[in-house]
Amino acid sequence: MNSIDKKRQIREALTFLATAHAHAVTEIEHAISGLTYALELQEQSEDIASQSKTAKDRRRPKVDRDTLSVVWKNQTCFLGNTLLFLFFERLARSPNRYVSHLDLLEDVWEGEREASTVRGVVKRLRDRLKEAGMSQLAEAIDGSVTGYYGLKLV
Picture 1 (cartoon, rainbow, N blue to C red):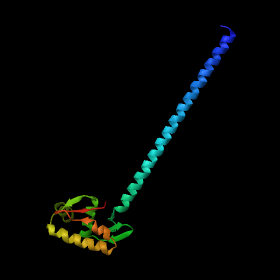
Picture 2 (cartoon, rainbow, N blue to C red):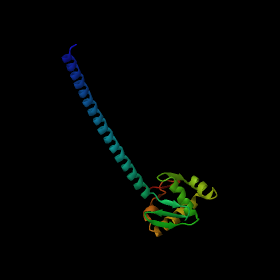
Picture 3 (spheres, rainbow, N blue to C red):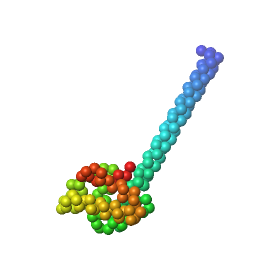
Picture 4 (cartoon, rainbow, N blue to C red):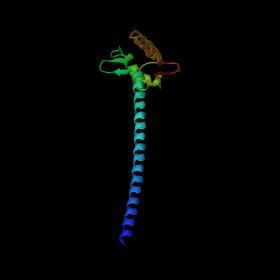
């Protein structure tokens, strides 16, 4: 093989390598763009989920066992070590779900009362929450299903 053929082969090989390299760089740039877009979508999704969780947390009252109070929307209602506190705490453990009178009697009164006792505590609890400026929270205590109470926060 003469020197002209060798130079041509080398030039062709270098041209082929340069073209292959340019194609590989383009593919890598496309992959980087795709990954960047996917990460941005994931961050947006996480931001939306975080905002949603924060909004839900703002709707959910905090039951403060240290102060025996309910904190909700920058309001505090002191209930003390009472049946009102225990009853609210039990409902708040399962927001947006109904709890049967039997379960409430067992959990709050340790089964030593009649179902009519529940209604009296609910009335007093609603009154106390309203006095503390938490009328919406008082109204969220739902007893519309016979034999059940729930804390409807949605």
